[in-house]
Image (cartoon, rainbow, N blue to C red):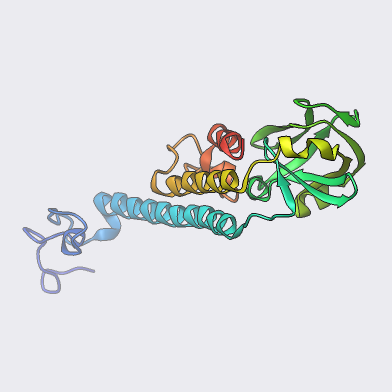
Length: 237
């Protein structure tokens, strides 16, 4: 029980939040009975929300920074043919090649669960080869070359090693399609610049899952579906 002898009057006494320099000016009018002070309750709730947001921002930055680190460590391989439309080829033997997704793009495709294939094993230039689907939407992969599918690789292995199928490709056409190492480096740096910009200028609240809902684990949750698909389209055109 509070008595006049054991407690000073709160008249003209600074609030504990003012003493801690978290508010500029606030006098206590509750005789330091903080448990029953509405201002104290509001400010504590506000402090909790601010801490939660700071922790969320740190986690989101960690997510993007891990992606940046992986992409920075990715190097151009002379034995790989980097094509347009985010695809790559690697010679197996003769005119047989592995066909897959550029590793940098695969880093960004952090949560796809379905692949939709077209049963036509003879793919023409500018035809859709397959589409990948996730909670973020659908991404089409369009062929910049003519080729014949020999064997397709299962989805779980595809997600691990980037290769989608073994194909037959006319070697006489190779010189017309790969992007140069200079172009590859330029596109890699463009992707890194975009990701670094997301750390500085965070997506607007309400367009990502930063404002509530499930915990952010993937890039599309942080950016929002629309911005995420835009990023995929801008990467290795």
